[in-house]
Amino acid sequence: MNNKTLAIVSYITIIGWLIAYFMGKEKADNFLKYHLRQSFGVMIASVVLNVVLNIVVKIVPALSFLGLVGLVILVLWIIGILNALKGESKPLPLIGEWSNKTFTFIK
Image (cartoon, rainbow, N blue to C red):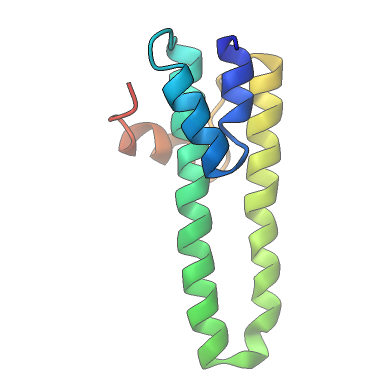
């Protein structure tokens, strides 16, 4: 697989991220590394958001509509995949810059 394909695959669950990471480890360019960091950031944000929302909804069941905030994660995934498809390295809204600064271990 080429790096563009691996960048797209990296957004498809943790399994896709692992496949992209290990298959692209030898031939990774800046484009692939960038999207690995972005997609990892989306996954971390997803887990944190789910944990926080589950706790809030358990405490105050009337706030169960906050589950719709999870759609933000879906939108971020779609934006990331579209950026990878177009060959662009644009940061994702809300978490893009944070992902690049935080996940520097992805080299």
